[in-house]
Length: 176
Image (tube, rainbow, N blue to C red):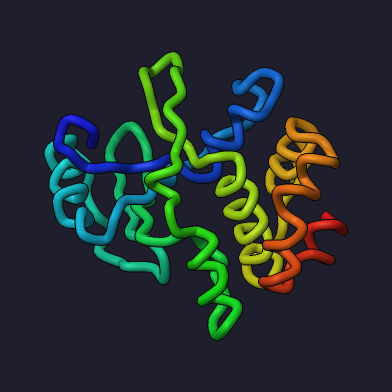
């Protein structure tokens, strides 16, 4: 994507793995990433050039691609954004997600992951999405726990209390 001039940021799984004491402790499924909606077609072309095929189904927040090696989900927005006024607020808090991404070095090369703030918001929204849909899994809870452990209570309160109260997820965040 970088070589094609497409800005993208890895979401959830691999980004969450970086908060674990050893990233290999975090089991992986597919690779989720987000691109600017203006770059969606260009990014789809990059995937096609790398032998990824689309399933042809557009989900509410992403398209699914696969090849012999694996599966990825190209997002145009993170999952779990609610409708209505809360959704408008969440989108405001997510603005700058690509701009504020952080470059990290991995065994596969440099990748972009969300800032600490955006990552926390994304994984909390993702847990809500799963809680009201497919069900909340142990991996979601572990990702949240290691994330919280990495920043500590004082930083968590300072970084998220206002945002989560504003979007109606403060009690949910504290329970989780």
